[in-house]
Image (tube, rainbow, N blue to C red):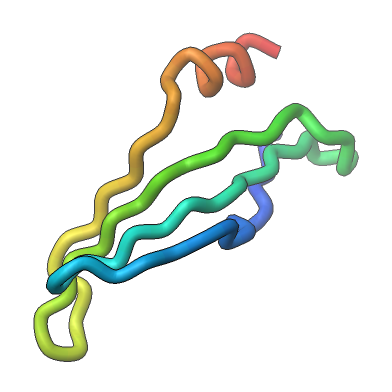
Length: 69
């Protein structure tokens, strides 16, 4: 079983109606031992008070290596 801790926000910024974030996700096994960490970049598009689009970007090679472990 794979557990993922909530992301730790590393930095963020605003550009027009977009919020840009960089965060760190930590993946653990069910026993709590760490599998690995992945840095992601997210973009949230805002209209009014709602998020209308949400995209995350990650290095697929890092995620593939975690999945293999």
